[in-house]
Amino acid sequence: MANEQELTSENAQRQPPSRRIADDLREAIKARILGPGDRLPSSRELAERYTTARNTASEAIKILQAEGLVDVQHGRGAFVRGRRPLMRLGSNRYSRRLRDESGLSPFRMEATKQGWTADVECRSVERVTPPEDVAERLNVATDSNSVIRRENWYFADGEPAQYGVTYIPWTIAKGTQLTKFGSPVPGGIYAYMETLGHAVVQAREEITARMPTPEEARNLRVRPGVPVIEVLHTSVDNDGVPFDVTRFVLRADVMGLDYTIPVKD
Image (cartoon, rainbow, N blue to C red; front, side):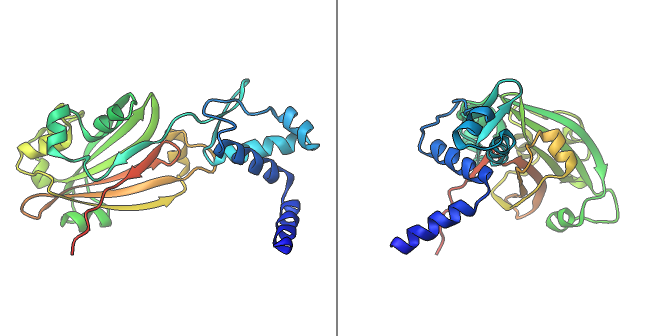
């Protein structure tokens, strides 16, 4: 036991000073010694406390910022992030009952339920040739403009939280409001799809994580070092027909995933 403690102490001493400071602050946040909204000591205060350079202390704060634990406000300092992530409720977000009760689209319903103010912006609608992975899931051609592409951006309390690019077969979208800007009906696209005979009875969601592209980082306002979550969603109707594929890209420091999965024999 003594040898293990000696090794732990030796490893801690080998860490860069910025990492040691970040570790101490992280533990203080986890223990709620520093609570949501609390201001961290300044780089000057940390430098004095740890007998190190201010640049080293600033680097420690950047480590916590990259981990999504603190927000740095220019001219004010660093503050412990004060809100739980907005959870994507994968198991019931497409529920007809919840949609009918709330009259809201899935994102608006989730945000409202969790105390966030939601906004959705449709940025483009066009007929295009689908990417190969989308064409495979929709069973459509890859050598023609066989789908409608709709790009929506989603905001929580005015902050970009995610964007989604939805692909719908042209055979379904032709002559409908799906080819136009904006949400077709108050309940969102899935309420409208149901009026066309395509109710969601099964959804497949393939989830991966990656670092954002420069464009995504800029438009989503992703902090340095923070990844994004990519969800490739496929909707299937009563006849077993896939009728939409949406590629969602979520900010990992704002959004989370919450799924309840029934276990079948």
